[in-house]
Image (cartoon, rainbow, N blue to C red; front, side, top):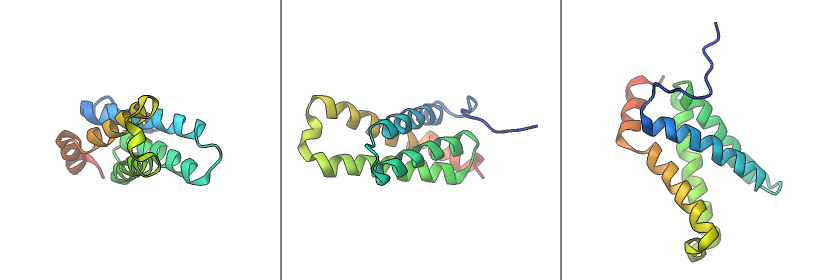
Length: 116
C-alpha cells in the first residue's frame, strides 16, 4: 500500500493551509518565472516542501520555510517600497501569510512531535 499524500487533513489547520498555499505559490511561481532558473528553483522548492509537509517529513517543512522566506526577501529586495502598491501588495500578503502559517506555534509543535 502506498502512503503518499498530496495533502494531509489530519495536520493542524495552519499546516494544512500552508501546504495548499505552497502548492498555489509553486504553480503561480512557475507561470511567472519567465524561464529564470532561480525562480523555477524557488517554485520547485515550494512544491517539494508542500509534498514533504503532507507526508510528515521534516525536510519538507524546512524546505518550505526556506523557500517561503526567500520568496518574501526576493520580493522586498527587487521591489522595495513598490510592494505596497496595488498588484504587488497581494503577492506580499500571501507570501507573508505563508511564512506566518509555517512559523505558527501549532505548526512548529506538530513538526517537532510528529515529523520524522
